[in-house]
Amino acid sequence: MAEQIEQSEVEPFDDFYNSIREAKFVREEEDGYIFDLGDEQEALVGKDEFTIFPSFKDGESVNILVERPWGDLWTASIRKIEKLAIWDRMQELLDSGEVIPGTFVHLNKGGVSVDIDGIRAFAPKSQVDVHRVDDFRPYIGKPGKFRVTEFDKKRGNVVVSQRVVLEETLKESRAELMENLGPGQEFDGVVRNVVKYGAFVDIGGIEGLLHKSNLSWGRIDDPAEVLKPGQQIRVMVLDFDPGSDRLSLGHKQLQSDPWEALDTDLKEGDTVEGEVVSLADFGAFVSLQDGLEGLVHVTELSWLERVNHPSEKLNVGDKISVKIIGIDGENRRLSLSVKQLLPNPWEKVASDFPPGTKVTGKVSGTTDFGVFVEIADGIDGLVHVSDLSWTEKVDDPSTQFSEGDEVEVVVLEVDAEQARVSLGIKQLSEDPWDLAESIAGVGKKLDVTVTRLTEFGAFVEIVEGVEGLIHISELSEDRVGNPSEVVRPGQTVSALVMSFDRANQRIGLSLKRDELDEGEMREYVDEGSSTATLGDILRDRLGISEEE
Image 1 (cartoon, helix red, strand yellow):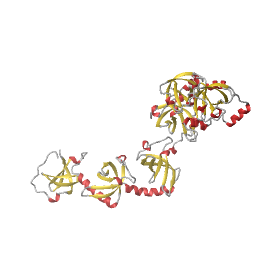
Image 2: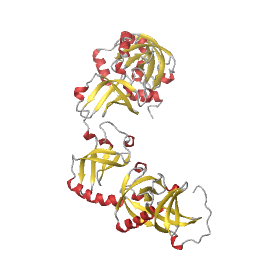
Image 3: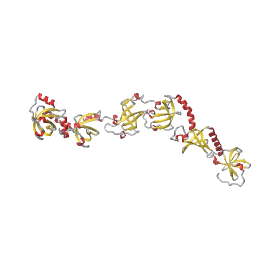
Image 4: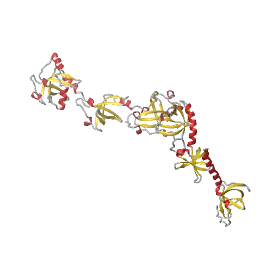
């Protein structure tokens, strides 16, 4: 009341306390509405009981709850009369098990509050639905059907359950549904749970798995990006096993397959627009249209740059132009290219650097098999270890070349299709074996210089960079125990060329012979005495004596 009315000392009527009376409307005052209780007693119902002020007619009878005396009046309530009626109704609902409508209003600790005829009831989490619910927010503001499961009138607590109502309904519909369920049927389902490999969808009391591979014709890495619990989705039954209750569902099967129209829409060589939807170590996936994606391999991102990861060139969400370079309809794969929309610089390289071109470049790197040399901006060629020297075997190029060194090379070959340039360093000079072959003919006598001695003979220099071997058996007519008994390093001797093997780079010579007829030469070659055996050469390089 706006003003407090002092209590009178009039002795109240005991039977008016907390009683429900039929009273007649008398008048409206500033603080409320005055009603005649009879026996010359009046009651005041405060205006704070109403959100919309009522219009009572003179003499209109209304049931009110008379509470206590207040001055010359009694305080009374109409709203409490309504609540008392509702509480009685709650008890009836608990006893009868009747299903009643209600509305989820807001989240509460342990459950959700429900409005039932103006009474705030409580639905525990486990009683909201037939399935497990992780997020209750989608339920707020939505209607439901409930059954009262607990009621405490003294404390004013009402507990309700929607689950028991749904279970009864679903039990009947589920049995009917399972009898007729089969592949090809379509349903409006509700997403119950989303997992990494798909989503579980309720189609009327039966939950089935919508695998992510059946969600869309396009590639979906995370189903949670497109589906949420509580979301409605149209699905098709793909397979149902009544024995295990396993139900497989599909969504993409309700959509047209973009690959079916691919032959008429797209072909190899077409330039199309797309959006980068995913990046992997090996390339970028580009969506050309709903359900149709292609791969740009890292090797198709640039003609010249070495791209280690597509993120160096692209970001998810980028709109790019690509060229279709391959269509594999059987495996549903599209190969795309970014670099092939641009001129191939390797074709210019082939034109600018024909075989035999000499060029100076910088060493860009070394490996076990050769040296990479940059001969133009972004263009690296390889000098293979076999093309480093005519006479020297290079096992580790890094001992002779460092990154940034300037070297002169000659172009041996340009393979524009494979984007490769073969270079040589030894080809900058003449092959000493050509000169050796011209002067060291079989049967010729040469003045040669002893370069080194081994246990199986003496090596002599034929021309600079080319050595021949005088086997120990060819040093003298007499038996020789050690080559040092006959020759010494630095000594010039006249030797007869016994054999010349250009392919294996071996030359055999003799000191004890002055000439060699054809028969002797054939016999000499057959016996293999003009050259060192593989074992001889290995022992010489490893420093192992013949006795060992």
